[in-house]
Length: 450
Image 1 (cartoon, rainbow, N blue to C red):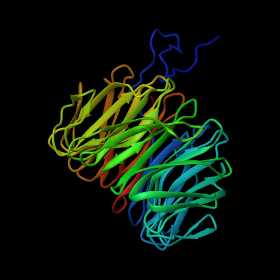
Image 2: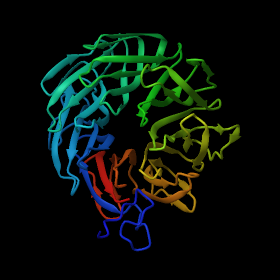
Image 3: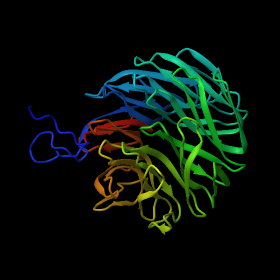
Image 4: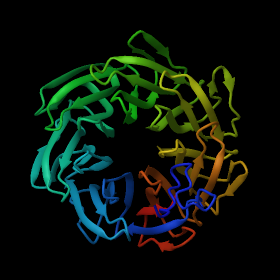
């Protein structure tokens, strides 16, 4: 047998050279989505062929569509070799429309979620929101053709923030709804607690309702991301206020606190939940699950945050936070990163070896010991690879100039290749390429080697 290519997602020596390869996140390629207005990448994933799927928003003109209202949503498919655009799809109408997240199933169908205002058209299907904004989940085939689209509607605001697909191609979505919400075309009604409540909904591959769970009281709560485990349980993370019951667990927030909860994949019933915070604001923006069931959350804290009763260092204003738990919710490790200015972790993914890839934005200096990164002005984007055992830094990078740069979401493929998306203005040096925005904010997609 001849040696193969090095796979940095494992600890094996595939090349038989006595090492595991140079796994430092080297730049592969980078592309931008720009035009006359503002473009932002909000979600990213790989499909089974290594293509990269990106969801986001745009205003004004781009080279694939003109916005129909103030802001429209998009999803694009990019080739693995160079980032060439395979196909783009736009969702647009009279108001603000966003594609917040994207996933794919085992057949490489594309699942995109978001929210819209007023009248919207997506691949020839037109909807009118029932409240100030409605949420949606849509399924596209691998060529980008619409298979179906479903709405979540209430008299007020609704939004889907995260999406995941289980081993049977069932789809799990999570977000927030107000008062009474109906999953139209799928036969589901939820009665909320009077404010903005967390919801998690599972639907089958044809878009039919399987189960739904919701959590909240009269205070605002929101699920910001969702993931599934290898045995199809569901993990949801986000932000909550007030007093929230997750099954037998009752959590009383001090301000706006971060939470993570695990739900039974068959029924949606809570297995366990954890909340973290002080009188200031905390949130978990992203959640990912490793092959061994380890759960990693990423977010930010504006005050002291404790895990196992021990406070983590807090620099001031807002610090990035990353924490890991085992499948039963037992805390494994946690870290904060920041100084007196603003730092936020916005996305996390876990590779085949259990490393956590974290992305976000920062001002000032962010210390991924031993790698210390300093902003070049304004917000810069960061990315760090953290080891599975204790979360120590394997490598860290930052990208920016005097403008605003942000890495919003990240994905990793089975070989350890990394895709990130976000947005930038001005020039951004990606340690292998330099991009310049057209007018304001452009969406950014970068592929990196492990």
